[in-house]
Length: 336
Image (cartoon, rainbow, N blue to C red; front, side, top):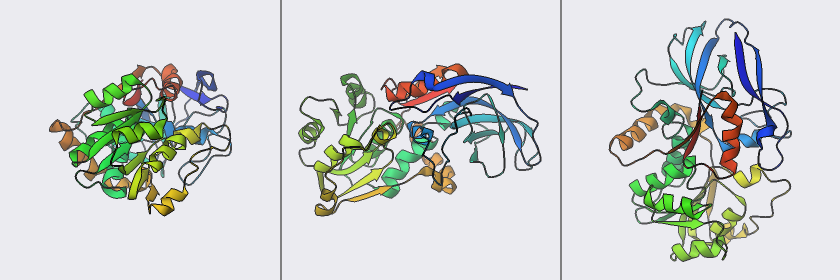
C-alpha cells in the first residue's frame, strides 16, 4: 500500500519554515502480530513538537526526530486492520503517530480509544477534548487552581491551550487576562472568548507595563505557554505566593542560542512563588473523566472551541509553520 508522509527534511533554525519539511511517498509494510493498521483522518499541530526537531533534543517523552523520517505528532485515526485483540476494525483512536496518511500501531505506542459514538465534531477530540483541553484543565485544577476573584494571566491566549484555559478560568470564577500577539487577537480574546482583558505582547511600553495596566492588583496565577520575556514580565507582576503553571515554552523551542530572559528568577524566591511544569502524557488514566467534564461544559455552552483548519497531507508542514507566525486562532488541525 502506498503511504504519503511529511518527513523532516532539515533541522529548523528558529521558527520552522515550510522547506524544513518534504512530502514523501513510500510503501507501507504488512502488519505483524499485536499490531494495527490505521488510516489517519486528521492531524493535530502542536507547537511543543518543535522541541523534538532539534538534533540534541530527546527526553523520556520522545526521542529527537531523525532527519529523513516522518515527523511525529498526534492524529485521529480509524482501525482498518488489526492483529491486536484490544482493537476492532472501525475503532476510532487518538494516537501519537507521524504526519502520514496511514500508520502502524505497535504495543507500547501512545494510543487512546475514543467513544464509538462521537458527541461532537471529530476535530474536537484533538483540541478541546484532546491534549489541548487536557492541558488547560490540569493547569487550572491540579497545578494552579484559582480561587474565586483571583487574576489568572495566560500567555499565547489565542492559541490552542490558551483559548480553552481562559474560558475554564472564568468557569471557576477567576478574572482572566490574556497575552497575545496582535490587536486582532486581543479583540478575539475579549469579544469571542470572554476574557476580562487582553495584553498585546508587542505593546510599545513593554509587556511588564502593559500587564500592570490591566492587572493593577497583580497576578495570582500565570499559565505560561511561551517563556522568555513574557515569563519575565509575568513574574514582575506576580503577587506574593503566586502560582505558575508551565505548559510550554515556544520562545525556547525556537531560540538560536541561550535565551536572555527571564533574568528575574530571584523574584520566585523573594515572592515565594510556586512554579511547576507538567505534561498531559503522564495523566492518561484521567483522560476519560476529564473529557466528560469538558463535554458537559461544551453542552452547557460554557465552553467554546475555535479551530484553524487546512486540508491535505501536503499542507501539514505549512499549518505547523503558521502557528509560529501567529496566523492561527485556537486549535490548528489538518484534515486528510
